[in-house]
Image (tube, rainbow, N blue to C red; front, side):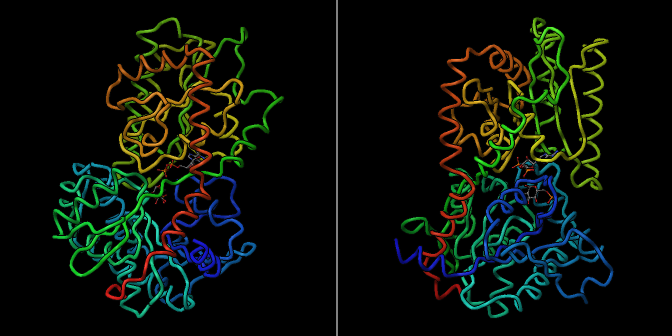
Length: 471
Ligand code: ADP
Ligand code: G6P
């Protein structure tokens, strides 16, 4: 509606997230920073978040304010105790595994939970003086669920929206998370709650109805305990043309990877933070099974896995790294040759143009998380392909992206043999079939790009009535 568009365009967008992209860096690992960096480039908004630094006097320090073009970025430091309790503790040891269906890995310490709620209050204290009347405040991800409640407690009357970048698990799982009731109530204080997929939205609605005594109203509205929120689906996307352009920059240049003397070498690529949700050990075992069960591929295929470090001080992340590195060594030792290394494993970030070119050079994109909110790499792989000779996307059915990217080869990431036979199928797929699948996928990735994600959220946001009982 024209009025919504006019209203939306006249309001300032204030984005709040724990992680804020370093706008001067070429490499950003993590879908949130990549997507928000793209969504906010050339925006006149404000981006508020954690600087990524700790300092002992953080609580006495004012936010640091920088400008990049029209965008203002304001960050605060955390104290070492806050980073430990809020970020590493409750957010990443309790919420992250729970939201990804890993209650077995969820550790909740009361002290950490208290610090999580306190840091959200401190975000609100620091953000309030930077707000202007009528701002549209858009809060991101599981670190900041209590923020609307805290802002409203301080008299903020702006509309506040939320977007969850991770899955929202089935209600029985969410109900098992310590402090779930407080989190559920806090989510209902947002005017809009956005999810990556229909199934995440359905899980949330089932939670609200089944565990909070709430009900579904017309449209996307949910109500519980006197609060009403608009719960809707906004699948996150990428800057398709930007990524495609980076990928094409390498055309006509020498390959980034070693060239086999007979030219007969296909590449399978994986790009993921080294996180236990990404299914890396299962993926490596699937590649090993491919070499074992389909010996015709030996010496003619290599698997490049780029896996930058993430949340390294947490023991589960140290465990997954050890497991991945052991498997890489095992496969290379068992199948490798003096002139063929089956797995190339790189434990560091790379600039986006290198990732884009590698995706274009690879015959198969292997994206097999055990659970993932969306997975941007799946979309990046499609954007990077040569339209006339595209590669094949092998994608986990448990990535949010599978709801949209139905023409990928969808696999169960727990089933190593199914993945191995799917890899064989991908490596031998005729060009006509590759092209037909790619065309459909590329269209969908283009339609649901990062601009569409931002604009459709903003449109819903502008048109949702600020509910008087919510203020
Ligand atoms: P997550 O948000 O869980 O990390 P996504 O797949 O949604 O997963 O987003 C990851 C983002 O980080 C992608 O844009 C990807 O290109 C980027 N990325 C992943 N690994 C690297 C790396 N080694 N160097 C630079 N960027 C990376
Ligand atoms: C996921 C989360 C983001 C997070 C990113 C990187 O995408 O949904 O909120 O920023 O991982 O993790 P980090 O802990 O480094 O911010």
